Length: 475
Image (cartoon, rainbow, N blue to C red):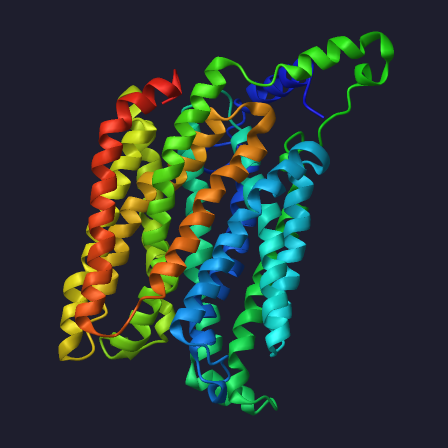
């Protein structure tokens, strides 16, 4: 059932009142704090499992892994990542039309936790069942928590992009902690020896890492329930208008609900469509972090710095650590610019260019592997540069969708937006399947990605004036 004009008007009034709420993080609405910590722990569970997923699949059976070859593992990884985001669209529609965003986040989190705990049991059946549960839960939680965040800000509120940057910092705090905790439990030799004293085989340590991811999601759910009052009036199920139940006013209600899209709305959706295409390419390259770059870190990089040795999965904490440091800077920077702030497509253009520079650093790193293991500083530099590109594009994309999508369909269009991540992740897995430890082969693979990102940068720069025209008054 579509929202009536009255329902939309009432919802707008609620948002306008929420604009006065400055009791949350850094002067933002209080609901941001609740969503911040919920997303933090959900991303802890997601990235904790992801940090060891490919390594677990390619590990020999004798070492507790599944013994898959690189191409198979990369394809499963890409398909899994794609499916998580592919289900965001039906998850958003379900919330918009039936259960509301607030309940969708709760149910999704419960299913995600069950998925991680299923992975804690070592068998091929529980492996795939666990992945399926995580995919289903993420499809419910991911689009709707972002839609709820957007609902905290009124039209023209300059805090919105800053709020999404803070929210993005929460994502990356969870993502930074996750590989350290889950990677340690899965790979550390000392922990393997410890669990033998508990009666477990040392190769079962992978599953302690998966279980830790589930514990993280449970913590997030408990926090979400404890702070639910901060989200009062946000993410409610769609109201059933009494006018639609009476014959005397049914035509009037149908007319109000039937006016689905105006010309201006279609233009704004066109802008989303253009940015969608370039976002697919961005994630196809960026998500090499969980596949080809993880394999590069595991097989071709020294796992020590200043004499301290660490598991290869810890490299995946680098990017979120950099985001934690830089996200507040970007949040303040966008607000300080005010009317001089670059438009969303301009930010996207910079994000793609910087991504190209980041993945391009892998070309000399790959060539140096001909002389043996390379310094970990190469991956540190790659993740730092890619982090800057990510902050120019990813949180801005989430914020832009909540500004451009019609209010009554924001959950659905947030789900559609995540399809860009889905397609990018699938393409990422396909690309990573061509990873090979031969230096020349790697240099060609990473160099091709850099060239593709540079070409996309030029095309989007040319399209930016047209995209801004489609966006209307929205920047």
